[in-house]
Image 1 (cartoon, rainbow, N blue to C red):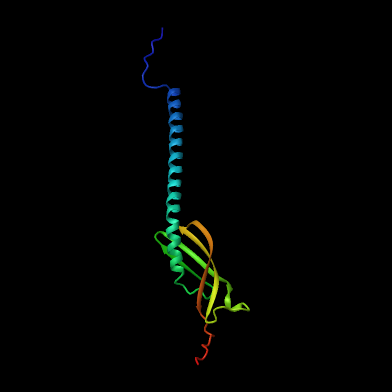
Image 2: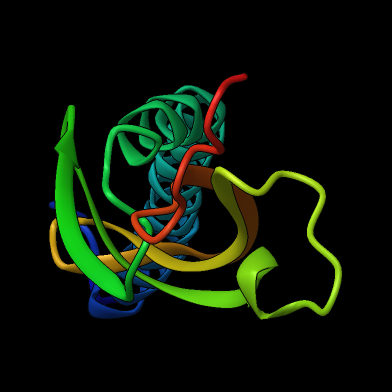
Amino acid sequence: MLNYISRGFSLLEAMVALVILSLIYTAVWGWYGAAVTSTNSIENNLALPQIFEQFKNRLMLEDLSKDNSGQYVIDTYTINWTSSIIKRSDTNSFRRQLAWIVALVGVHAVIQKNDSVIKVFDVQLTTQWRDPTYVEPPTP
């Protein structure tokens, strides 16, 4: 008669426990990674409307009468932009405002955070400036 005294776990029991713990760890780590990713995405989506408003306000202070480019840093976001004139009123055959040039400007912008692209968009704005070639008619 063999009389075995059982002490500790057998190798098979230890391996089964290790596999179960590995599966649990993998599931929890995957859930954590998904939570972090969606938290960053939610944070960016909540910040974008305010970032766009500040970008638009700063852009209106720029001289858009010629092709231009620049970079703004708003909070932790970096916006690289370029502008180009799509259409100008002084190139039309008929002009309503003789003293002013009105232009449609296309702006291409890339919003980045920590060197990763968050959003790329194109927007069209109107701008105006005094026509330097305009001569006031003499008053009678």
